[in-house]
Picture: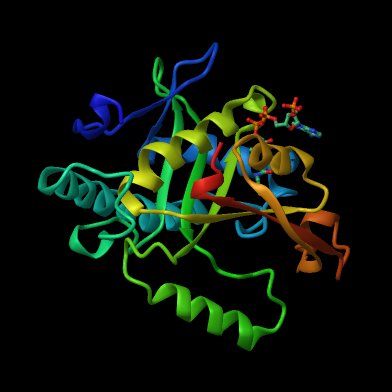
Length: 251
Ligand SMILES: CC(C)(COP(=O)(O)OP(=O)(O)OC[C@H]1O[C@@H](n2cnc3c(N)ncnc32)[C@H](O)[C@@H]1OP(=O)(O)O)[C@@H](O)C(=O)NCCC(=O)NCCS
């Protein structure tokens, strides 16, 4: 991990041929760029969870949760690092040291020259939205949620988006690779990670492919698209592809 990772302004450089970018904590000043980005169809048509239209209030609620979780994660990461430097071969003795993973990890992808917000990437426990039977979905979620941080059996999931002017510049594969290598493996002991994408979102599928994920399954009609995104058209569904990354097969 880069030496500045544990500095007070947490910053993990993302290798990129033309931009100086990094994984950083979310900031309150990201609000306007985030709200404008999520209200762009190139973004909202590919995301399920943010409300639409997306308001300043929605962002404030998001920030209260994820900014707070980020502070708590960073404090924990520093404590873990001081107690015992991270290990990439700790699978067998994982229960003897501390790990991140009680709460989701969220990083903002930021231009480190001018501090500009470029996008977000997060990793949390799998929510199994692709399992259509609600009881089975809840059972799998409860089972996964109760595993202790560091348990190699935890199934993780990734979420990400970039503001449209930064699409198609190879940023997200580099950001995802950095998150896996510098945070998820050494500090979360992640072994298995899912990436889900709407069936028509070729770019997202390619990001996962380029980062060593392999196709796992496709489930049709998982999500009902918010009618507000479709000029009021009700009941339109979209399927999801699920890609899987496993530590031994990581690229
Ligand atoms: C998906 C997203 C994160 C991709 O990140 P990115 O940094 O732009 O990815 P890349 O530049 O590496 O592009 C990935 C690949 O998809 C291709 N691609 C990009 N946009 C595309 C599009 N609209 N249609 C088809 N292919 C596209 C690129 O050409 C590239 O393929 P290549 O390497 O073979 O040339 C970004 O487009 C985005 O934020 N989209 C909106 C939100 C979203 O979809 N989030 C993911 C939800 S699962």
